[in-house]
Amino acid sequence: MYLAAILVLMLIAPLASILVEALVAGGALAPLVLKWFVVWGVGVRLGLAGVKQVTQPAFTAETIFEISDPKAQVIVQELGFANITFGVLGLLSLAFPSFLVPAAVGGGLFYLLAGVKHALRPEKNRTETIAMVSDLGIVAVFAAAALL
Image 1: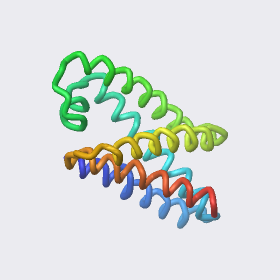
Image 2: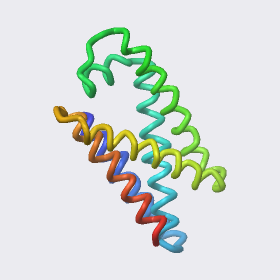
Image 3: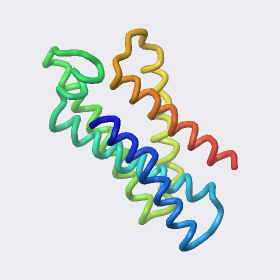
């Protein structure tokens, strides 16, 4: 289920949104890539992850980080608050285009740091590997959009 959600939020939904807007409104590709990967990758993904972390912190603690100590759940909930904040910023970029670059920079930096941290852990499980690949993948998309 986790992999399916990541594929939808980090690949399928942004690409479909880019395609639809490009066909309907046209325009340069890089701004569309940045817009829709921020909306789906930062706005929706981090927003939903944050809600899950606040309401079910054991999932992140146990499934991704393999920490079963209930004391870790407080820290996961605080991570959830940060993710909700990034998610709101990413979603607001639809209504307020001036939020797009700050959402991309903040979300991109978060994903870069999280992805590197995942990469440095020697004993990753499947879920953490999926998180690492998707985290670093969206950083690559943001970097490519910025360079185009």
